[in-house]
Every structure is written in structure tokens, then in C-alpha cells.
Image (cartoon, rainbow, N blue to C red; front, side, top):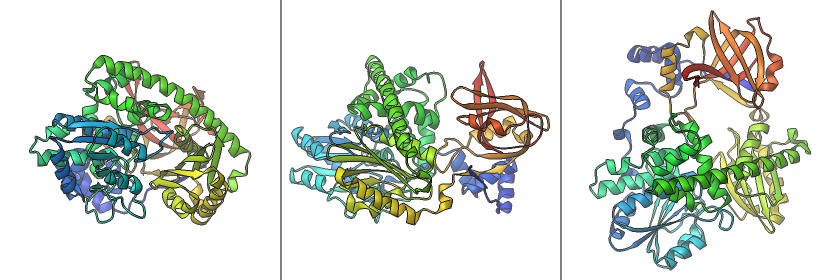
Length: 562
């Protein structure tokens, strides 16, 4: 059972000030304060971010060099863009390609094969840049640890500009310029941009240097929102601005590829939020890279042909169905392995198997973490080499954990909650032993108990139409700006609760005459806790709007109940 933790509210004078300035209910003021908002201007930036709120791109270390070099290359050099194969990399590559093309550059792009080349700037990619006659290479969403590959490019006469957002390694590559707000000595005020966000700052910098109208950069905000949402970066500060403005553009479906994806996935005519990006659009874009050629996803996003966009979107849909089957098969195999060991006494799970598909182990690792609440590493073995994906829980830095075990690895990279690795098959057992030992030392018993952070306690009659509108204005939702979570006590269950669909719990609740529908996805096993009639139910939930028979209804999406 999860711990319920009601967020501290010790800032009552500030709450009262915000209530007066913004004319909002006390609960809304409390949520704002707990999200770091103290002043009217901070509230304005939160609710109504504007283009002018973005930071100057030239605050980023390396920007001057990068912009100068690209401007020199625009007229007479071939530029080679190398990007990662996930949505973050694909959107960044698409954006840079379209922008540079618009400026008259001779530009080409390359996405590595996930299976043959693995993550990051590859020697194969560098050789391909030479083969295509490129003298300038720009990486997107990778490159910060590519010391050997950048050195090879230098030897071949290719200048390299790295744009990345991952943690740096022991030493930086000898690139002409590195754009990464996380690199040592970078004064850029916001460190949590996605890879497409860093690439967008480069576009912004180029627009300024070339004297272009800001609309030249704004036209790519839909791609920035798509990549940033899919990469699950914290949706605060500059990310919030980019995603909020970008979703407005994305919802206009001006890009043929995005419209085709929306059409084939049933989103046409419906509002697209971060949730729809993460669970509907992103998996379809990712699927072609997980199971085949990710460059098809770039072609989908850059095409100016409606017909071609539809054709490629159908391929994405088909590949996504195949990916789901692989995903489920791998998940069931991994679960079977876990259930055969005393996993309750383990602080981490490291699983490996010959023949697992490297394209789905990241998704499966996330599902294992969700079910067993342990840092999880899945390794797909292919004869002598294993490729792994690691996912974590809130209080364990999995990148630091891998670093502590790097003697057993051929390579690794990533960040606090998600990482990848490469390992010799013969070293897997020694690595598992070392990693489990680190987890045992670093993870406390209480860290293995899921926690539900509750923003505020409310009564059901407080959930008015205006209250719901105010809550909706907190969007876009994502890490560090999740949908507010509420606790309501002493509710009465109305009618007969039932389990619907795939183990979803559904019933109605009443308090002081106010009745709401409540649904708990995957919580059918909690049916036994409900006793209709008595006001004895405590409910933790988020408030959502749903469409039913053409009308918008408010429902409570249950997170837990007692």
C-alpha cells in the first residue's frame, strides 16, 4: 500500500497574498505556492508564458562558436545532422534540417540503427558523413560522451558541433563547440532542456545572428513540444514555456506528418495534450526506430506531401502494433523471471536474456518499475554483447549507480531516472552483483514504498466549474508539474461499484449532496475495500474532464483509496 503524504502548507501569508492578487480559492493558492510561485509576475509566467520569457540563447556556453561556424557553412559546405533514434532526437533532427534547408544550406541527416550501432554518435555515422562529403556535423540529443568518434571526425576534416542534454562523462569530446547546459562551466540558467530544446536554442541563436524575424523560429515550436513532452523532461521554467506555446501550434495540425499521425490514431478533432503525446503519438514515432529504420520518422515530419505523410503514418501504425506484441511478450517473460526469485528482499532488479529485442527493453523496464517499485535494468543479449536499459525510482540516481559499476561495463549514459548501457555477456553476473550491492547501500527500506504526494485536502462541493477551469490552466502537465492530487475524506459510495474493461474500478461518490463519477484504472483489485452506503471512504484522486455523449463531464481519477 502506498504512503499518502499531504504536502506541507506553512506559507499561509503568501497564500493569502496570492488569493487577493489573483482572486483564486485558497486551495489553488496553496498549490501555486507549493510549486514555487510567490509573486504576481511568477504567476503570470506560469499561467501565461510568452515568447519574451525565453532566455537569450547566447547565454549558453559554445553558442557563439556554433552559430559562427554554421553561418560560414551556409553558402558552400555540406552539413551533416546526426541525431538519436528516439522522439527527442527525431524532432530535433527534423527541425534543424527544415531550418537549415530554409536558409539555403546543403544539408543531409542520419539516424543510427538502434540494433547495429546502438545509442549515440557512432563511427559508422562519422564515416557516412565523410562519404557524403560533409565538412560540418551537428549532433542532436547525443555526442556529449563521444570522445573517440569526435576525434575520428576531426581526423577526417569534419568539424563537429555537439548539441546534447545528457550528463557529461569524465572528459568532453574535442568538438568545435558543445551546446549542453549541463556541461561544466555553462552559465545557462535552465539546465533541464530536452535534446530538441537545446537544438531549438541553436535555431534561435542562428535566427538572431542572421537577422531573421522571430516567426522563423516559432514555426518549429510544435516539434519542440512533441520532443520535449515525449522525453519526459521537467515541465517547468523554459520547458513549460516551449511546451505550452508548442502545444498551441501542434493542435493546429499544420504539419502533414503530425496531422496524419493524429488521424490514424484517432486524435483528429480532439485536443492534444502532453498525455496524448506521451501515450499515443510518441510510441508511434518511436516504433519505426525500435524495430527498423528511424529515418522514416524524420521523413514523416519533414514531408510537404499530404499523401506521403499518410503512407508513412500507416507504416508507423503497423510497426507500433508489432512493437506492442514484442513489448507484452518481453514483459511477461521478465515478470516470470522475477516471480521465480525472492524479489521482495532485493533493492534492485537486473534481468538478462538472449534474444530479447533491444528496441523494447526500455519500455518493459519502465513497466517493471511501475509494478515492482525497484530500480530495474533489462539487458538484451546478442551472443557476446548485451545492450541494457535502466529505469529508476524517485530516490535512486541510476546514472550514478551505473557509474559506480562502470568497471564491468563497456559504456553507459543517461540521467538520474533513465540510462542505457553496453556490456560483455560474460560480465553480466559480476555487474548484477556489483549493482545490487550499490542498491543495497544507497536505497533505504522506506524508498521502496511508493508514495503519493497530495497537494491539498478538499470537499467535493469545492469542485465547481470555475475550480476545474483554474486547474486546467496548470497544464501542460508533466514531471515537476503533475496534475494536482487531492484527498477527500468521509465520502459515501453511491450505487454498486463494478469492475469494467481491463480491471478498472468504477463507481460514484457523494458528499454533502455533490455526486461525481470515479474511476480507478487498473485498480479493480481494490473493489473489496468499498462498502456502499456508509460515509467511510477516503479517496486520493486527480480531477479530469471527459467527453460522454457529446458533453463534457468532470470525473475523479482515483490514485488510491482507503
